[in-house]
Image (cartoon, rainbow, N blue to C red; front, side):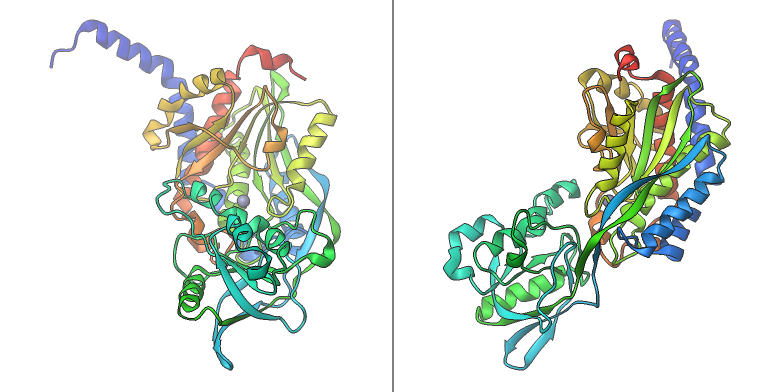
Length: 464
Ligand SMILES: [Zn+2]
């Protein structure tokens, strides 16, 4: 094919203008994939430390370990930011069964929801009323709910391609189910696990009693999807069956903990801060490898890759490992509070908290003009098949930093398998793929490199 000379010229000039950024991204990806540290760090966090629920010994070990690792990178500054966090303890393993006739029982897998009260010492045995959501409670009223266990069984919607959307469509049952059912005199609630798969892992997660007085709080547990199906089928055959459950979880007073922070000072604009982070705490059932060990080690790796590549950022890059995202968001709130009190200027914050799966791109929470700018970078990510740039939410921990000027972003990995593991016993190291994890680190480091190089428009440079 004969190519017109003009087209050759354009092609060549485009290549030349892109070449520095392309080369820089290639160097970042190459290093992450051949000489990465993220997987080793995750191995330690998951297998040597384990689940890191706020206020636990493991959460404190994770603070010490990540601080020590950041100290070893030769950053300009590494420090701990104190924050008081809630301490909720699961206690001995929960126990539950379906009783179809006196003495005829089938054990089922449950776990207490985070923040729930315990059952009485002898457990709770009662008739069950199955509902499809909080909106059903009002229709049923006191008469049908009083002295029963309310079973919230609305499944995640499998037709949603983003499993996070399916999660959003159900999570109100878990978060507010007990507070709402308690108003109608229920004795306890059982919530179908937020899982698209039918299996036997119950998935925990945070719940809240809102302003329910302490004496009126009823226990809440998640039931595995397999057991939820069994309970529902059994109830259709005989609505008069009993359900029994026992849990002895407990809420203690708040305890001292920390966000872990490391920083590379900017050479030209040291007062312009870019944050990259994930949350250091996790639920207690698994070892929190996907949620959010992956985000923690990927964020640490961003600074390590910069340092190891000899890159000197113009702007200040801070890695922030937030404490207590899962059951309080105290770390995220504390970081934003201190940043505001010190009148720091943040121009960008990026969080990885959607699992360590194959990255697909980013979602951005920003102005039209800033989104147009980042879309100009999309083609640089095409060779890595990581160029899905969307508008949308970023991450819970960086949310409190939000103001008009700041660009927030979240790494968006493939979400199809995430809820197989989320907040469950099988959120473990062997379910994280090394290359997928490393591609995430490289993708985050690449975006940080581009923001560092180009900034986001002059108006933010003067913002306080
Ligand atoms: Zn998370």
